[in-house]
Image 1 (tube, rainbow, N blue to C red):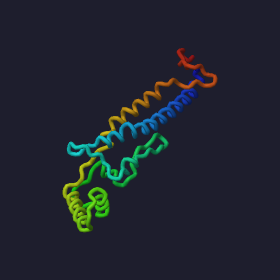
Image 2: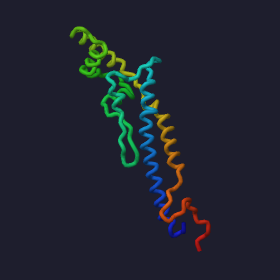
Image 3: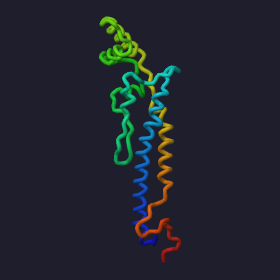
Length: 178
């Protein structure tokens, strides 16, 4: 490559590298969902006991990847996903209808009075003690970083794309410009 061609060639190679890195980050996001976040969900423990955050299965099924201009975003759109991740401080009681639905599904009380009693007791306990966070993303983060680095290394390991008239392996100018 001559000095005159060098700026154009450099710009082209940088665009190619940008596309490769963008693809690498999107691939890393997809891999992270299956190889980091799902295992973190399944390995969740609360007070030493295995307790994956699962009631209806919506939390696990709602994880998504959105491709954006400069990569990808891995997220969970559910309103309660942040409560699963970080927990809930003591103080206010949770909404009655949410707890009542949970009591119906999990405890299956036989009477309306029992349903209301259990709902009240659970609301009060959550209001007093809060809910411990499951920290799914925090636990998945090291694996997500490892996956992203693997994809970046893979993208950088491929040599530059040769141009139509360029040699397969471009050489930088070795002579001083006069």
